[in-house]
Amino acid sequence: MAENETELWVWWQRFIGTDRATFDALLSRHREAHRRYHTATHVAWVIRHCRTLLRDRFGDVQTVGDARPTDAIIIAAAFWHDAVYDPTSASNEHASAQLAARDLATLGWGDSSIARVAHAIEGTADHMHPADDAEAVLFDADLAILGAEPRGYADYVDGVRYEYRHVPDDAWRTGRAAVLRSFLTRGHIYATATGRSLWAARAVANLEAELATLG
Image (cartoon, rainbow, N blue to C red; front, side):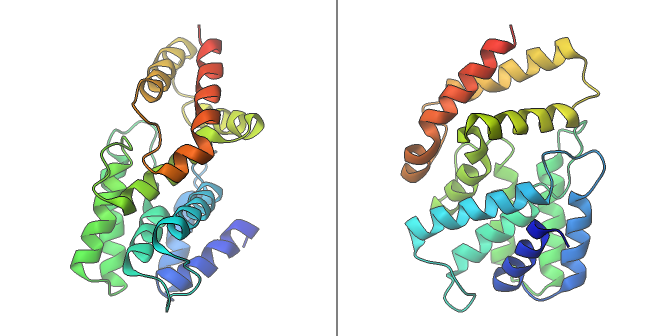
């Protein structure tokens, strides 16, 4: 396995379970040829940032024995949130939530925990109105890339453009500009105080700089 995948396997065993077949099936989705940004590297990035925010809001999460249920739920949502990724579809989050529900049921998770995971995944469609602090953590971790250093942000944009390479340039610029403006006109890009402190200023700078290139 690649380094990120090895890291993910460690987290899987701590927070999800020990079933390797389900883990491998999930990773195979993130290796699909049409993906460039939404890969296992992105999942690892999101989980790292979830853990940073979880430590701040819920306490340290080092082992499954010490982890609170909320921690495991949000890490599970991070694992599955882009499990289904078709750039031509508007229902990826719903399909990913359904897959997570099926897989977690197979792994023996309870219905109430599965429902929380699925709800959190569905919420990543717009990263708005988190139902609780835990969803706020997931949403902010997923959007942390917006507040990356310029080189990392540029790599993210290049990766997403590759995934949407079927979209003509003019349509891409129009659609992308609308997405950027939607973030810039929110009251807050990040739902947590820590997310705002760590990433908000850089995110605004990155979004404004990209928007200026789109005409």
